[in-house]
Length: 250
Length: 210
Ligand SMILES: Nc1ncnc2c1ncn2[C@@H]1O[C@H](COP(=O)(O)OP(=O)(O)OP(=O)(O)O)[C@@H](O)[C@H]1O
Ligand SMILES: [Mg+2]
Image 1 (cartoon, rainbow over the protein chains, first blue to last red):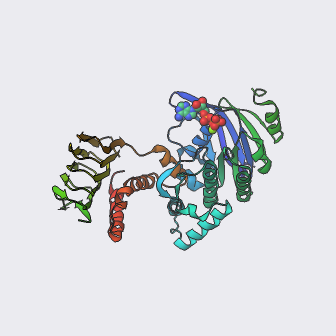
Image 2 (cartoon, rainbow over the protein chains, first blue to last red):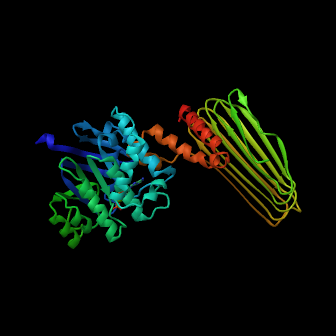
Image 3 (tube, chains in turn blue, brown):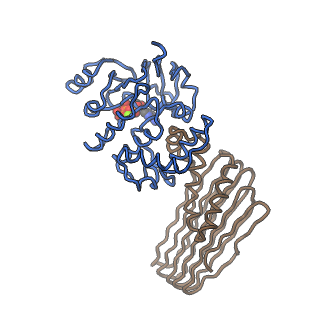
C-alpha cells in the first residue's frame, strides 16, 4: 500500500563539486522496516546519509527523495529533523562550549517551537534527560559535559543513541554506529535501537559487521557499490557478504 | 587593583586607562568588552615594573555594520619575575573592521618572565575585515613567551551537526559564537556581573547579522 511508504528515493544522483558519488540510487522504505546497507569503503554509504539529512556541501544533480509524501530535498537539515529524520553520525562532531544539556534543550525546544508548542518545562526536560541517559547507560555527569569533547569513540556513539532516544525520530540512519564499540556497548546500542523501533518507525543501518545485525534484525539488506545499489535481499545476504565479500556483486 | 571591567556600548564608552603601572606583588585583571555600534581606538599600555606581579588582560568584541574598532596593547616587563596573559576573542560582521595590535616587550635584564598573548577572530561576513599583528620584543633570555593569532569562520561541521538535531541555523551560529567568547567572560571574577554580561552579550549576538 502506497501510504505505508515512509521514504522513497528515486534515481538519486549526487556528489560533491564535479565528483558524482551516488549514481542512481533507488530505495523504498515502508513504515516499520529496518534496512541494512552494506558495501565496500568509499561506496557512497555516508554520502547517502549526508544527502538524506541535507548536508550543505553535497549537491543533488537529479532524482528525488520523498519522505512521508513530502519533497525532502527542498527541506533544510533542521526541518528534516523536525519531520522526524535522525542520523547517528559515523564521526560525531565535538562542540566545544556547548553542554549536552544545553544542546538537547535547544534542539527539543526548537522542534516544539516549529510545531507551535510551548517550550518544555525545565523540570520535565531534566527528567526526560535523566531517563534517556540511563536508557543508554550514560553516567549522569555527562549531562554537564561539552558535546562529544574528550569522549571516547564508544561514548560518542552512545551519545548518538541517547540523542536518538531524546528526539524519537520516525526514520533513523545509523551510519556505522557499531564501529569501535566493545561487546557491552554494542549490546546497549542494539537494545536502544530495538526499544525505539515501532511499527511506525523505520531505520537504515549502515554497517561493515554482521554482529549488530544479529541483534537488530533487518527486513531488507542492500549492497551499495560504486554509488549504486547492486543487490537487494533478505538477511541471508549478510552471511553471503561475510563469506565471500563484495566481489560477487556487480 | 583587582578585577576591572570596561564596557563600551553605543553612547557610553567606558574606556580603560591608557597607561597602568603594576608594581611589586600586585596583580591586574582587566577585561574590555566592546559591543556592536561602537567605533573606538582602545590603547592599553601596562608597565610591569615590579616582581611577583601578574597581569591578565582580556577582551571581547562584537563589531557589526560599519563599526571600526582597534585594540592596541603594549605590555612592558621591565624587571624580573612577572607574568602577563592576554586573551582577546572577537567576532566581526557586516562591513565592520577590527584590528588588534599586541606588543610585548621584555627588557634586557627582565628574566623569569612569562608572557602570553592570544587573539582569535571570527569573520561572520565576507565584507568584514580583521587585522591582527602581534609584536614581540624580547631582549632577555630566560623567558617564556608565546603569541597566537587566528582569523577564521564558524565551523561548518559543528553547524551541520546541530542543525541535524533540529537546531535552526541561526541558533546554531549563536551557540557557536557564545561558546567562542565564553573564555573571556569566564575571566570576570564578579559572578553577578559575569552573568548579566553574558546575557547582554548573547542579546547583542542575536541582534547581529550572523
Ligand atoms: N568531502 C569530500 N570531498 C571529496 N570526495 C569525497 C568527500 N566526501 C566523500 N568523498 C568521496 O566519496 C566517496 C564515497 O564516500 P563515502 O564516505 O560516502 O563512503 P562510505 O561508503 O561511507 O565509506 P566507508 O565505508 O569508508 O565509511 C569516496 O570515494 C570519498 O572519497
Ligand atoms: Mg561511511
